[in-house]
Image (tube, rainbow, N blue to C red):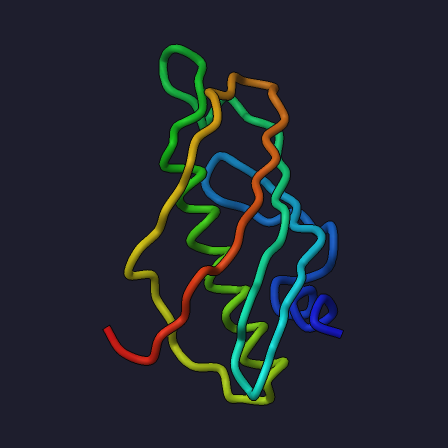
Length: 123
């Protein structure tokens, strides 16, 4: 049920979404809600590195990964709120942590594990 809410929110499972220079697929969303609050939210994002998303050395810009992470974590939070039957509130990132395992070159397939660690009501 949580996966379907996420899929409805982001578009459709497997649908390609767009960040300038990069199209990506979202799969395997998992949302856990307890006592009306989102506890955990994770998914996998997969994309092939296009030339438009790379620097002069042909390596993926780290900012592309950060942008995708920010977009997807916001969608996970909104989907969790919908699953908890709360209204869709404005959310924004106050801390975004990204760990880069290794560089990715043009044509490489990147697999990202994206999750939300903490949600708070105030800054």
